[in-house]
Length: 292
Ligand code: GLN
Image (cartoon, rainbow, N blue to C red; front, side, top):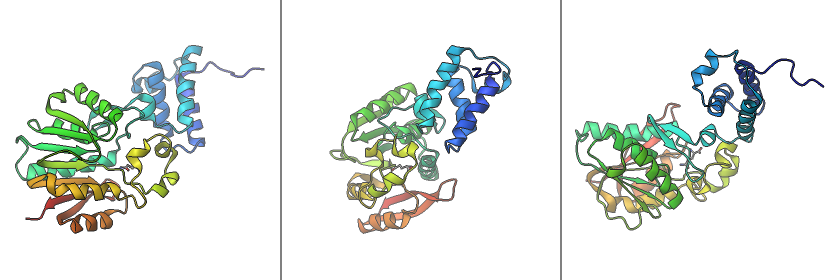
């Protein structure tokens, strides 16, 4: 029985892989096929298209098949590659941290807007990232604010190890400290800028998430309790004590959560500003200050 009529080439394998991803309901089938082939072969993504006629040997096919099998089980490409770019920083990703998402860059934008508007870019700002995970938010901000100092908390020490490695990788380790704790327990403050992407999925909704998220993101980083708002409640309880006068807190919101989170911070005696939309037009970053 002849299985293959022709020798596999970069182009034919790329097409076949993309097709199998599409059949599995994977949206980003073409891009994923290209990324995984490039990773398996240790070549540049652009080389795949440029060298479409290049034949692949059995060992190369095996390497590609091994990665493809993982993607077909809906493991995200970022996890297979072990890295994800966030705010132009390539970050290491392990099973203990969320894969940083483009939505979360809205929090960075909102934070930088506030810093620049108040003329604070070169100040020695004290930044806190609650539930830092891979360190994405904290490191993005430190990369933009050359004199800022950062603290990142996480309840997971395994996550903090990833954040620390990412800080070192980007030459930011001398400006940040990582603390293992729930929310901000034990921290004194004050902080000029607090950011957080807390777990915000309602417990009962976790089962309905895409398998890429449900089966691979750490549950502790997703599960916001019965209504998804436990993380915000805990942050609201601590914000007044942790924020410096004139300081600002910016939290990421899950889709549709703006009203509930606004009410919760207002009830805690804080002043809530406008929400900033993400690229899909979803209210994504909510800005909070201490009432004057
Ligand atoms: N963005 C994740 C999702 O896909 C949730 C992340 C979080 O809970 N902060 O729903």
